[in-house]
Length: 222
Ligand code: ADE
Image (tube, rainbow, N blue to C red; front, side, top):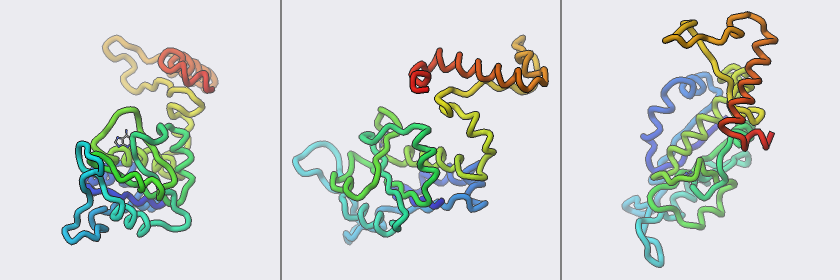
């Protein structure tokens, strides 16, 4: 998969792309991630990318030209162009599964007070990562990159996906490691028993109980 990220702040991505699973996924060519500075596409002599909004109001608005040109420079016939905005569809694990099937994503990060409304005509989807407002689309783009990359074939063990919270509309089951007794809290006996069928049943019961308690809305969907 190829992911192009259009942003005014490419340096914000440095840490997250250079560590852990995302770094390994790139090194093994499971994903190719390229950052593009929207400012580089500005036709303004001073590389200006924003201006006052018509009709007044607080803050600056990103002009459509640099964003449009950045999108078109990356677009191919297989691209899916996604705009990160609090007005988008609320992002869920099922969207991550869908996006992981694509071959090319172009993620467009807005910043400041917003972007010219006409940009919406040039994207395929709008996604929000939750009902709160961030300073820009960079952190939401990181959320998409991370959640999609880990689902790509060969990036992590396939078995982990099946265990994930939200898979099958259930939260994940509890896991334990050494020591068996920590401050008087013991690892559940069944996990030490080596009885695979009992462990499987116990985990499913735990998943259902935890989901019932914390996220009954997921059980209704199930
Ligand atoms: N940009 C600012 N806030 C956002 C959010 N919650 N989701 C996606 N993009 C955003």
